[in-house]
Structures are given as structure tokens and as C-alpha cells.
Image 1 (cartoon, rainbow, N blue to C red):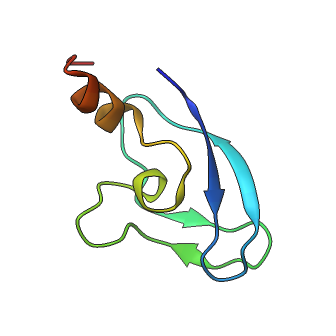
Image 2 (cartoon, helix red, strand yellow):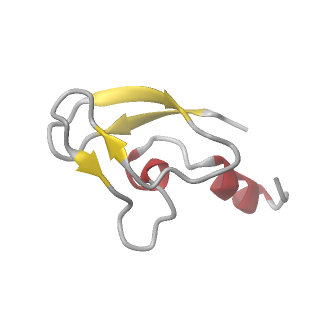
Image 3 (tube, rainbow, N blue to C red):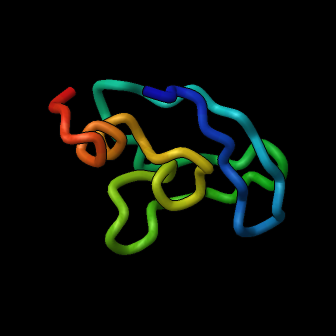
Amino acid sequence: MKLDSVITCPNCGARHQERMPQAECLYFYTCASCAAQLRPNTGDCCVFCSFGDVSCPSMQAAESGSAE
């Protein structure tokens, strides 16, 4: 399971590598470059699923068929 994801800000295009929490979803993320407050897109569970290059741990587990 991958725990690091690069979030790309849709406002300014800045990219920041972040460690994903394993036990919870991250619903809000503030871009360190432009201070935009990111929220998940409709249908996504968290900001990593919307703006990250790697899905969150719960989605990775669901995609692999394991229950973590």
C-alpha cells in the first residue's frame, strides 16, 4: 500500500507530497502555495482521491479487495 501522494492544487498548479492518514479520510487540504482550501470533488471520499496521484488507503484496499 502506498502512503505518500502528490496533491496538485487545481487553483495554482502547485504540487506537494503528503503522507496520507491510514485511519481516516482527509476532507480539507490547504495549499501551501496559494492557501486555497481544497475539498473532495463530488463522488470522491477525500482530497487525495480528487487531487492526488495515488488514491487514499481505504480506496487502495477496496480496489485490491482487502479490508484494511
